[in-house]
Image 1 (tube, helix red, strand yellow):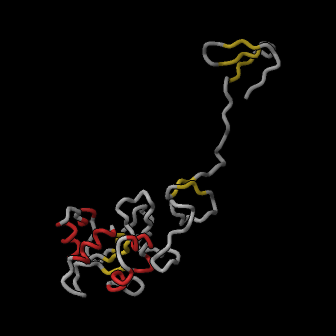
Image 2 (cartoon, rainbow, N blue to C red; image 1 turned 180 degrees about the vertical axis):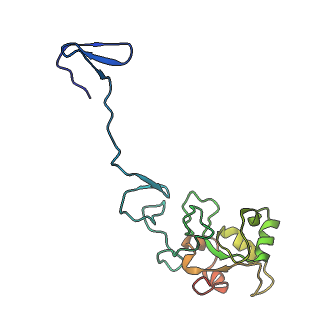
Length: 181
């Protein structure tokens, strides 16, 4: 806010003329904010040094199915609803991409037959990808046996706890792999 103690004359151009000093000054002063860093991540504003693994809900870190900190799933390809490499599933993720799966050709065919051709995104057998829990469950329900390759293997440490909203832990464990290999 500018305070003038001298008489001023307002001009049509939005400038203020100080009559005693005969100088033009801008009508508004703007704050200089070049030294402020604001980042928008996963539905919240996070400052420098704060935890970058925050969920959209309540500022809590994303947890896996063991209620531990969510493990990185893949950066090649970069996966996850938020494209961070983690299977984060914020509330804004209506598809609930919480299952850390390892793709097979059989699952890719199954998903394409349901209208989601993941190959068009460049995915191939062996890629690690955060899957919609409902699609993983569809494949699980359509399986023909315990070793059916239609159901992707699951990395439990990288699978978001939100997966348990749709599937049972014992079902995930039945298709789990050790340490994502």
